[in-house]
Length: 196
Image (cartoon, rainbow, N blue to C red; front, side, top):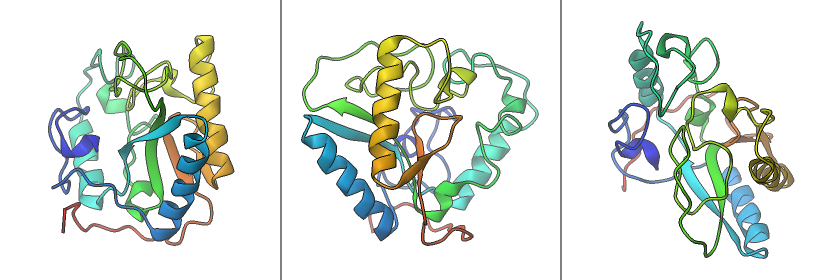
């Protein structure tokens, strides 16, 4: 759970993330379980980066964007921080706050460590997706081109698995999926992420 740590574009834990816990609606959790089971049959596993996000964290992200025109070579190398909301990389209202949106990747069950990507954060064991999680850059678009063949294959594998499980992909982020027919499509929750 990236936002409970400092390994994210903020460089610190986000407001409302008091523990590294994935919270999802029952419907999203059941659908995700089916995806995991189908991947396990291929000796693959899901690696989850973020699930439910308190609305206070969404506001924290938006405040962080502020008016800064800076770029960051790790998190947003080609997009000014002040443009991250306008270009759809950071939301002022996030589907994550409804509890049926998840950010994730696929990894082999056993694999050697991979090199870190040039942009964004990555678990060392994930497949090559061309960028890491939260690379706030055009190259993170699911259908970005040109992309190395292995990254294209990995993105397609993730989209196919999640689509089969009842999720839809957000086209600007290869890692971002929302359950179709989510139970709270208009609700935004703000309870903190804790172990309780």
